Length: 173
Image: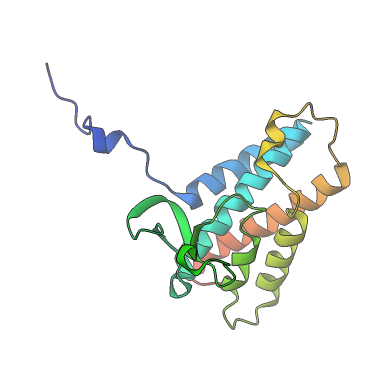
């Protein structure tokens, strides 16, 4: 049997790349929104924002304990952080979940930065995705709030623009 380059078990495992996933989800959400597939667009706008914010937290919030190391200190395929508000100090380190669950960590990106565009993007993401839940993908879609979808689309655009700014300049605004 001829071996295939990269055909071992380690190379088959997909590598977590929040920035790439965020870009893909954002582009797909924009396409679906334009095609009138609003519920799926809303879902992907949420996933896009989640991934784009995780990419920024991973890149800029390491000083605050944000990393790919779990509570046991081992490498993980998920993003973790040291939650200063954790009730049980033995479980202070926790995973950054979906966008509605990671809102508490977003202010770590400010870290003394007075940037108006960054502050506005984080405020919008925090407000507009507060009640977004990943399990909406299982619903019949009759609950779609078009005004909220519009705000989420705008917040996702802000997150996307913030990500593009970082990609071009290497720093937060």
